[in-house]
Image (tube, rainbow, N blue to C red; front, side):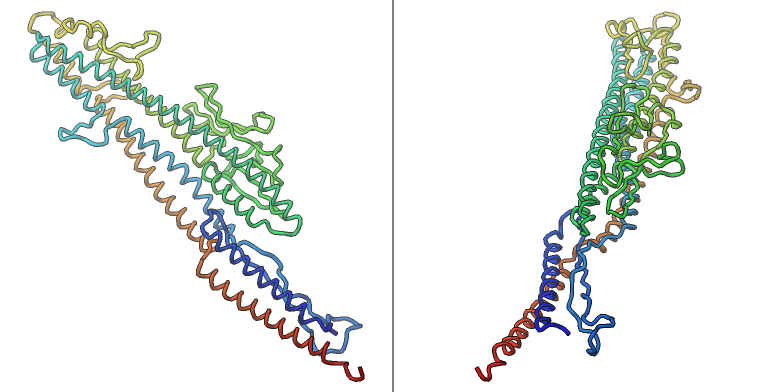
Length: 498
């Protein structure tokens, strides 16, 4: 048999449950625009009824309900969509960096917009003016003005190479700094996730859901996924195990997948990334343990793709690949310089162009026009015979414009060789733009799906608030009715004979 005050207890539970639901809806509204927040929902369950099956139960008809209880407050989250989002996010991060790199390379080479004469504002134009100066000199080989023009164009050509090389060196150094910054950011994120893991596991052990902490953790994991390719596994205690995701045999040590952070959040077991540039010829992204011992090399920049041992993805890979790309274009520029200087010096019969530092061979960074000729342009040779008015040498050099040069075994004109470099840069830049556009679209679509599950709809929450308010008011009214009934029972009965 239920007690006399059974109705009061039942309605008290109703008030508590509806109040919890209203508070949760209010929490959702408060965080409608909080980054990473997942809307929460109160899980209500009926409490065990009176007159459960048993030998000593009463003979009352049926079971009498005892009300409602809040079983849990859960956040709405789709782990599959999280997986999809992070998978696309890593590629978006990688290609955004690559696109930015190609944009800056195009600025350095400065051949994007051609002028009316068909030449850009960069090296192509300087080469054209250099050949034209020799052509003018061949027509008037005794003209000091024409000789000065050749020297000036030669100096301008060498300085253009110097400037491009210097810009490429500066860009590469900047990319290394940005790589270190991203590596440090990844390490900080791993540390923050580990701390949240520890708190979440403790709260989970108490039988509660750390919804807000889990949202913060997922937001950090999303940020980490844009930096590096990761795989997330949630254990029974609510902790996240974070591994270096892989394709085929990538991301393993002795065949075992690399665990960046254990699910218990133990900081002594959290690995850290390190970008080691102590050896300029072998700049290495590696993983280290808490004692600073090397665990595995992930990516070695030495010009050989075979040393991309456990190739990552994300922004960090984007920066590593960018460093390689800048190095590659710098090497192509050096090959162009060496091939050009070798042939033109052979044709001239002396060093028209020479290294600035004689300790090193000529390169884009280490090239200058013959300093004796800079000081004395009158000494510039125009003929092989030395006869006055003979401009055959100047003509021969001018005709090198259309001659084949040897560039590391490849035969091409200077213009074709350089335009080949520019063409390749343009194609790679377009591909990067296409990849960014595609991955951005996929990220946006996945995020829209995530928001449809986890995002807060203010209209829906307001409707829920009204619904819970009505239920609360009804329960409160029922308490009043029950109180009146009990008052009548207690104070209005048993008074006969007093």
